[in-house]
Length: 361
Image (cartoon, rainbow, N blue to C red; front, top):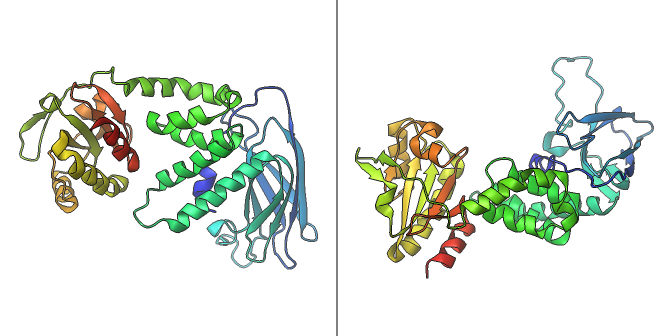
């Protein structure tokens, strides 16, 4: 388990009634473990405020927490070691979270036993449906991580695991908590839309989901084929002006990237593969860099062997095209049809190939 899994569920959603969730946590440590207390942190509600922290002393290798909460929440439990008398200011034990040692992650939902082994790794027993869904997510991430290589997109990996959780636990808070990852910035409707549709009606009507649902609706409308793509004119690598309108009559992927953006550079081979497959069927790519250094921009184009035209006004996210398309992060792209209408946004990995296959026969 890693820190990505914490981030993957820290955004919580509210209960739909005044019901309370009762929890009882029992913890056990092996003989000789040096921890003196356990600290459990969790969001007390869904307002996005400070986490609440509860502390329990460890006696004879045991500790416990009990209470009630509005709805099941993801809690992080840390075992605290005694401070070194010899080096009190430098005490930074790797046991206090390094490689997730002496750290527990679980949903406050029913009765849960947390057992630490001699290496400080936690295992869990018991809990309700939310804890089962959370452990299922952990096993899916672990399985995919073991099969991944250096070119694997971390976000895509999490998205695949989240889809499986939603498919198997559509009425779970865990499903919504995982879905929240993909709603914090600009929403990719092709990614978030199917996940949202897979939630139960109860979860779709939760307050948290209702807050970002208008963003999803707007994103879906944007790629519906009814929105005109804003035109722009920016100079290419030779200093010649290039206008988006010159691509009318073709499918064109307007690809926002930068030489310093590692995920962008990792995605370039995927875009290149799509280009090679569909370039003879009316598919074009126009690269728009958010670089501010011309030399680094040209160097990256050469290194990544990008054959399509590239433009840049060296104004980063304040450039003409970036502002027109409200680009807040990269990599990002917009797929435009032959009539100049937007039909896709933020298509990465297999999603880009699937969308092109559906549009270009």
